[in-house]
Length: 67
Image (cartoon, rainbow, N blue to C red; front, top):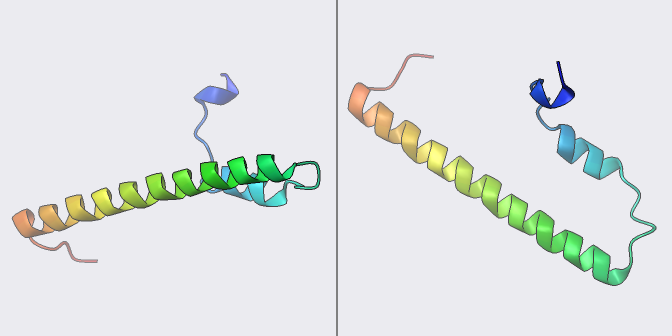
């Protein structure tokens, strides 16, 4: 089985990014990296908000599930 076929561990990419040395990056490269990370943060927040809205709609339709 290829490694791409295996499920990814959650948080793995963020953990790897946090460990990476930034010493070799130029000011421009750091700026580009920040823009990419901010775009990813926005994407994750949008997905979180969409999932939250979906859950609220399901709870409104079916009632809140017991936890």
